[in-house]
Length: 511
Image (tube, rainbow, N blue to C red; front, side, top):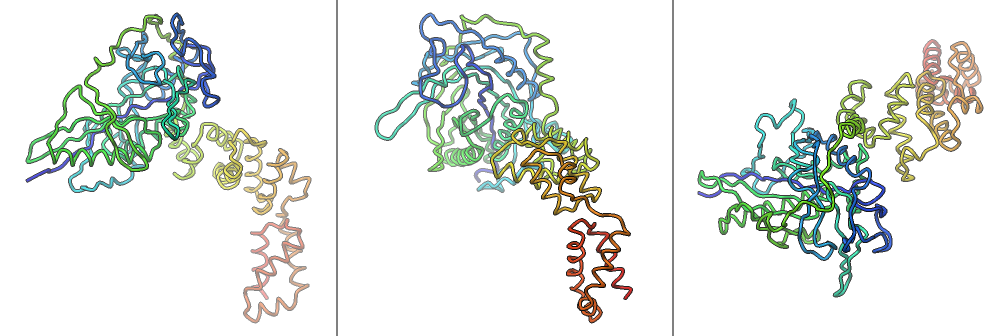
């Protein structure tokens, strides 16, 4: 007797700061870092008499995020007050959205090919949960995670705990515009939770909603987790734990993995079961690799939600929704699939080329200007990306344009220059910004592909190296490489290597 099997059930709440110029409800600058408490005003501090106003771009970016995550956008919405007391919450309440969120009923499809194997300590008893039944798997390629809602809210201040007995509050972050993405409990493993957040980060960065830098707190996740446990044929549900402020993919995975096993052991010990409205709020200690209870929540009544009295409910125009849809455009996974089918690229190639929207657009412009998209991709991946990574640059920081890469690809493809010369041309155009055609002409690099001219050079090399010829006839075939080097030297590196090699071998074989 005992536990027959169990399922891990996870729902994520991802908080993402938006890339607006100002804070959510005031004109204070919205940016990371700086001297503490220097970017604050009566509005974001909630001082008596201060009146909030919805900043330009706040609702627009929220709608873009909703469209990118396949949500329905509300035509009418409002703001609410969520009351709780914490040192970094200056007002004693948070402006958020409660019962009428801006976005609802969306989804994110996770590529099944990216799923790592679940490594559970009790692997034979663990099974992935599947709340959507057959509808969970899309086209046999994707696992669908439903998004329940995306609502707008403001961020709170930041607690600074210094060595010793003192803690401080930096209120610069107060009022920073956020969206909160709330999923259905469709996630069934720690690895899947990490992949979900990684996919959301990629999408929202792609549509320029957020910087998405986890280390800066631009994006963080609260993971709600509990277990479905079958024991002696009966189904039990463990209490929900909400693990707060997970700010790395590794933290999400490791925290959920630890908490699942902690709940399993706790269930085996005291059979504690799920109680609606009750939730443990947990802290994740990354150094120790354990969760611990911070506080308990009894119900939403604790928050005493009320309609925000200082901001009127408002309508969302069809124009705003249409503009948000246009701003989304083609998303990363769709672009990857198209690049594979249209340009014949590998999975590895498209993963890198779609790592940012700017790089994907840059590649596609170069591919369309060139006769060989595959060679364009190879040049970007092998040459350009090496430079970007070495110098910590982005594609918008370099002097060269898609036209440069397209010209270079065509010059290589037509054997106008050799691959070695191609590296030299790339370095020079990167430094000067000159087009490959101009560099090739100025340096006199254009490859000789005229069969007659190459044959004359080959004949001259053979005639002037009788010892090498005798060695070849004596069975030393490695001398061919040396002779080929002499051909390239005599032609100043301009002879087409393939043609020269074929002619040399043909003449030597005939002797």
